[in-house]
Image (cartoon, rainbow, N blue to C red; front, side, top):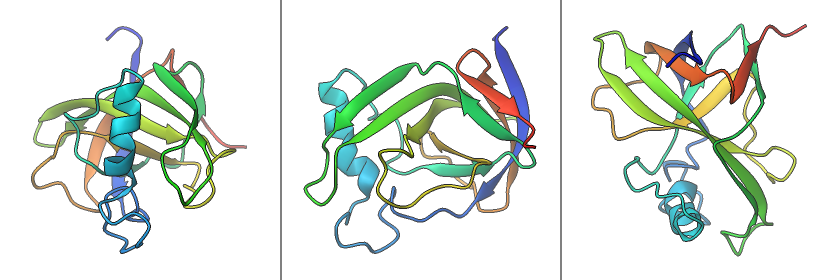
Length: 154
């Protein structure tokens, strides 16, 4: 983990679309469940991860994408929307009780994403199901600095 940097984060409520909690009829099981087979066809198996994302605020910091571990261009995963670009980055969550979980930062490219945008201090992460994690919880997010750079906004 020599290229890794740790940042304090807090779990925030998201749009609920990734997990299907939003009630959006276009995505009854959530967008992640719908996308998983398309990523698997292209070589990325997301089955170990919960079909939703954890929204983590790293405020007051923002981030810049440097070099993704995986990038998928023009992925047409829904009949109700345009093709989108997605990237994934390595990460680890460290909870206050010292439990650690390896996962991926999920990054739908904003320039191809039709709706449900995130604030610039929010990173969406995919993890195995983590029992007891709730909105407002504080944690540490470890990221690979060769993949994502943390920045202080101007």
